[in-house]
Amino acid sequence: MTAEVGVIGTGVMGSNLARNLARNLTGRTGARVAIYDRDIDRARALAADHHEADFLVASSPADLASKLSGPRVAILMVNAGPATDSAIGDLLQVFEPGDIIVDGGNSLFTDTIARGENAAKAGIEFVGVGISGGEVGALEGPSMMVGGTESAWSRLRPILEPIAAHAEPIAARAEPIAARAEPGDGRSAQADPESCIAHVGTDGAGHFVKMIHNGIEYADMQLIAEAFALLRSRLGLTPPEIAEVFREWNRGDLESYLIEITAEVLDHTDAATGEPFVDIIADSAGAKGTGGWTVKTGLDLGVPVATIAEAVSARSLSAASVLRSSGAALVGPSTVTSALEEARESALEEARESALDDAPTSAPVDRDTVIETVRKALFTGKILAYVQGFHEIAAGAQEHGWNTELGEVARIWRAGCIIRARFLDRITEAFDADPNLSSLLAAPYFRDSLNSGQQALRDTVADAASSGVPIPALASALSYFDGIRTSRASAALVQGQRDFFGSHTYGRTDRPGTFHTLWSGDRSEVQL
Ligand code: 6PG
Image (cartoon, rainbow, N blue to C red; front, side):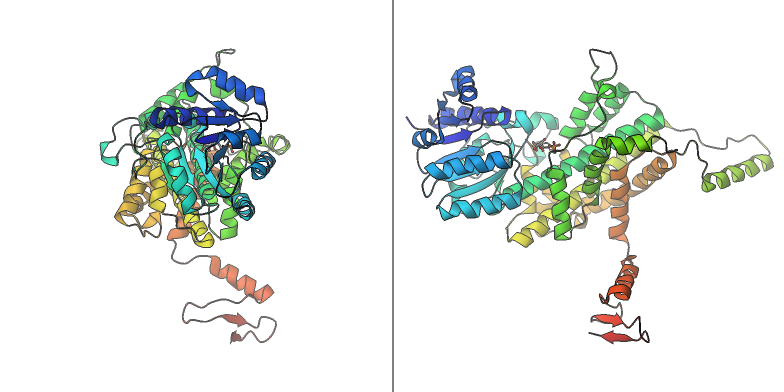
């Protein structure tokens, strides 16, 4: 008895993916799934706990190879890094030319490119597949971003497409976003436009796109956390009250899995203390690295991803306990009256004195206005984070020669993955309307949304700055917005400085060419 596919690594993600595969393959074709784990007891326990999956348990990489029908397909679901290298090394010993090794972990895309080159020397295909959706997604239907060759994709597609999430057609959407991680249902492996899997380019493209997905995920989460902090500090709302606000937001443009789970977390009460759960979680956020990779890669590509970078830095800052304890002695706006505030106060005082009646000197804070302003600011910031992420995908595809279709990426992120959102429908529509769209900014929906949301973002950032609430992602999104819309950037001065100290040259606004001013000489200009 042979198996159609093997899964290596039976941790939570590997187990769930193997069960998803078994449910679909066994039900559809009668084919079986082999599992292997260096901890053989763990693999055996999985098979024992899930008789319905009818797993074939392999006792070694060689045993796994003997249990797989050719050309063999094995999916690695092990930790990124050394564990992945070690598992690949094992398989290269026992696999034959034409066999396929799939890495379903969160590997760095440059590692995937190098591993592919190495496997190719043995005639073995190596395919990096970005898998998003967490534990539930792995079991019920993840979003999958596939790299590797076209021929490997042809072999993998009938295996992977049925287990991917399936999004509803855009026009037919009525259900809440979190309900959309539909299990694979054994439908045909022919082109299925609603299946959340795509071949996004060769070699490391799958892991590259997954990396950007995670970068956007970091930004999305940080922006939501900042909105929470603002509602709490400016309006004094309790976590359950803010949960209700998020639930309301989830009925509109912001509808997304992350907004939905945020409401769940905020509404949760800690059993031990009776306090809101969010108040007993240590405020130090972890990170496994994919957000940082997005930022480093953006820097390498020369793509500004400031909002994603701020989201990564915010997690680093939250975990920098020594820095934060020294910062505890710093004063905030409530104890320092700024010159601006003093001027405003004295103007108000004068107005009060000269007023004939006792008109109020400042408008009361209107709860609904603040909530609506923060909602719009969050939505605007979210659009800008996606603009950055899609810019980086386009630049990465160009750099590496991948034929990555941005509309296809938006399409497969519509269900199954962590950043799934109603918003992805709008991105898909924008690329459907113009497959060559140079940037999301060029799409009317996004341009109009940014233009109508920018004032709320501005007001929110200004209010947070004057009240001392840290909102790095929102603030960077605003600076990014102003940076891309400005017609005359301050970079002209930077070019002048560079030319002064390093003869780095500059272009001119009035004629083409490359120029240098003889700063240490007579300051005349030379054309190079
Ligand atoms: C997903 C997630 C998943 C995981 C990341 C984030 O798409 O399913 O992005 O890959 O949650 O590893 O991890 P960190 O927040 O720990 O970096």
